Length: 197
Image (cartoon, rainbow, N blue to C red):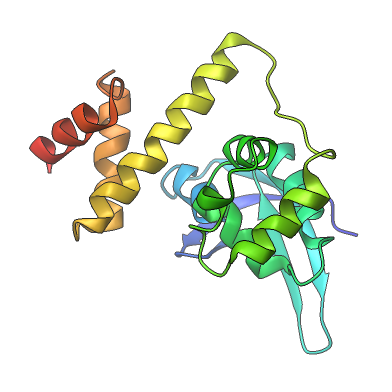
């Protein structure tokens, strides 16, 4: 089993990246959140934790930037009728800690906002994972990060629903975080973002 790969990012796409390993390159399927968090193409090497999915007609390598993401991914694909693509779709929609928090609080409405997940699937996920998953909180900063991630998702969804391009939305959110302007009530943050767009 391939535990991880180290190399340079050769190219980034919406659902996968190409990692240059020297004498050859590999396609690695990743969540949108992980891809967006990668820096622009550079000469720096990155390490990607991996999961190799073996199918009759293909070998698919899935990549993750931290243990939280790959651990949740492995728990999800052990649930009946949830495959790797659905698990990546979940990780693209939300962060592991926010998803776990929704499971712990039986927040079916929030879970069903993820494309492809209906109420029955959401109920099955909660039933199977509620007692198996824990929030990865080591400090007060982690609690703040969870709240910021939640605000990030809410702002992003709201702006995209207004017809604004996702790339532009993520760029503005990143700028606001760098400027220390990404805080406060949802409505206030959305107004700040709209003034920048």
